[in-house]
Image (cartoon, rainbow, N blue to C red; front, side):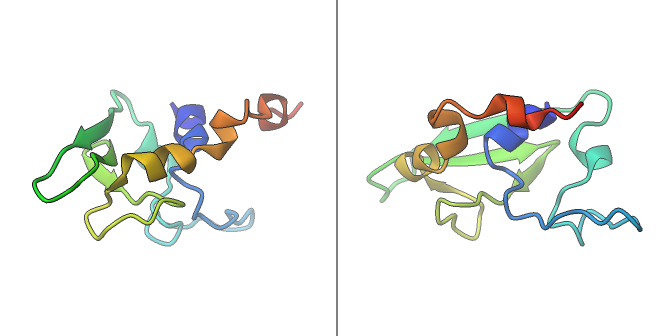
Length: 104
């Protein structure tokens, strides 16, 4: 599931994790392998049409927690317009450089 989350850009705002000490998920802007993919992990991508909104909104939940979206001007509830969400998927939309995601 983690490669999918990163292809979606869910943790693009996370700074490089330190190699000399452990950070809490709060210190790492919400990313923690233990929180992200525990046994029976769940992810939902919700699309909703709200009254007064001309375009559907999108938000992502990982294990019942709203993940703040990066690159699409998300509101305080973690939602952004669908067209902005799709534009923010630049890595996946450009074919992705998937070979660079793996190290030997």
